[in-house]
Length: 185
Image (cartoon, rainbow, N blue to C red; front, top):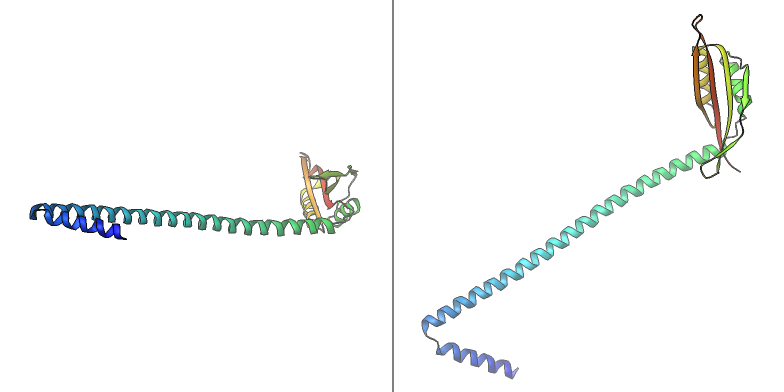
């Protein structure tokens, strides 16, 4: 503390020995240095605050993105669980189901060939299929049949359909594959 007082007294004595013009120049230079230092300090604070705001905005943007992803993940999980529940509850006897729907649509199935069960995806889903051939069938009856097959219980889909029209009549020959899916037990 004594050294600081001593330095302050030396500076005061030096300043008093200066002429009036020199004092004005020293004061102007000191003021300019003080203004420059103040400018640097304020500029530094401004840049630091701006950097904090920018990082905060980036983090808020990432947080919003995470919230959107969490919501879409939740929806996808619910959808997957709904499909799994449908597949778990699906116990459709495909051949008898297809015969029943064909009879209701006014069709007879002259050729029905069951295919071997196939494991899909990670092996947890089993696909059962049957190939059907309709000869001389009316397009409206075929449409009604295929629509009613897909509206039934469980997960039943028309997997493929090939049509060959007959030029002499308003009928056609149709080959189709109908599949049902269930969870492996």
